Amino acid sequence: QVQLVESGGGLVQAGGSLRLSCAASGTIFSINVMGWHRQAPGKQRELVATITSGGITSYGDSVKGRFTISRDNANNTLYLQMNSLKPEDTAVYYCNVRSVFSPTYGVDYWGKGTLVTVSS
Image (cartoon, rainbow, N blue to C red; front, side, top):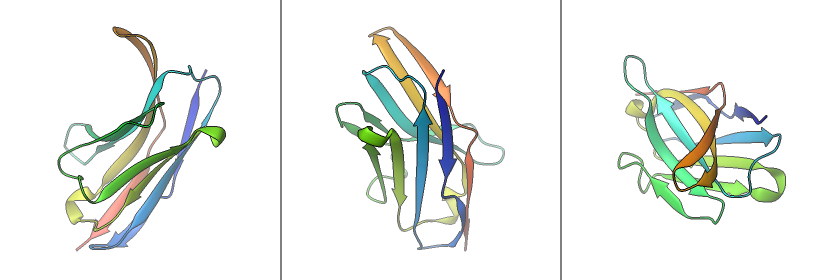
């Protein structure tokens, strides 16, 4: 079983920065994708960024150029550096790990989320 614990959320003014962390424990398949998703009040959960076990990154259009995803494989930790934050970035941010067993089969694990609030 994989457990994910997010940290680093909080209240920040528009234009500010925050760094989220996600500590993963348990057995994670060597081929995997880690990512951040977010859900704002009254909205559907959306993809923020992902990074593969090989280091390939992908970002949602709304955060490109402002957020940076990274991972420390030795310590099973995922990061999200968020710069130039906007009020519309306010959401609960969730850490996700997908163990990829085949091109058509993977298992997802989720953290409980950390709240980011950006004031205008």
